[in-house]
Amino acid sequence: MKLFGSIPSPYVRRIRLLLADSAYEFVNLNIFSEQDRATLVRLNPTRKIPMLLDGDQVIFDSGLIYRYLSEKLGRPLLSWAQENQVVLINAVNDSLVELLLCQRSGLDTSDDKLFFNLQRERVAEVLAVLEQQAAQQHFSDWNYAAICLYSLLDWIDFRQLWSLEPFPTLQQFVAANQHQAGVALSDPRKGS
Ligand SMILES: N[C@@H](CCC(=O)N[C@@H](CS)C(=O)NCC(=O)O)C(=O)O
Image 1: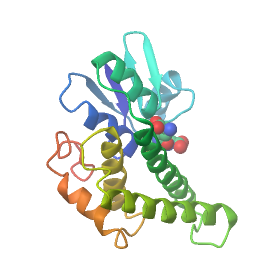
Image 2 (image 1 turned 180 degrees about the vertical axis):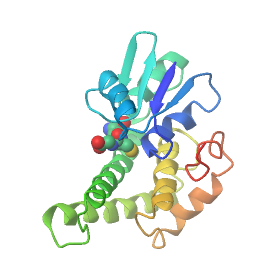
Image 3 (image 1 turned 30 degrees about the vertical axis):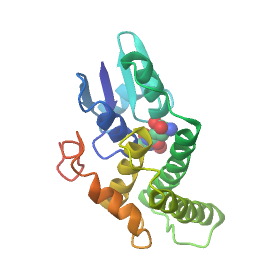
């Protein structure tokens, strides 16, 4: 199996953490370089990472990769509550990716514009919901939802995308899970 992605991507890191104890090859792409973009486009028309190559089968999207691996490795599927947690995490993740791409396009994302306001509102409100869930111990097991949350929060910190000060339980969650398998190895600050 080959996992295509980049080191900083929180969507890719989830799968790396999930596979921390499994044998696979990680192909590190710079999706904005000409050569690696050609690989990306050839394998995945959505032009997003991650994707997984297993034999002739290519699987796009972290959620689908999770389902594929669960079946292949005999791991449990998510409960509906966990599926909802991943949807919440994806909502924040997608909005922050959009805002980051806007910033990289030279836009001022603090402008009072509908698109920016919607993303900022979603990020703030959903982080508050996740804080509440974490305080109620909903992320106490290191399952896929917790892995997704860790990948998101650590990426937010790495890219300095949003203040986590109003969310002490989420900060504690990150601190408490730094020892988990694959976390140090996949740390974007170390460039490994
Ligand atoms: N729904 C996708 C989202 C993946 C995604 O947004 N990946 C980002 C990197 S973190 C990406 O490839 N962005 C490129 C782009 O938006 O052009 C998944 O879960 O895999």
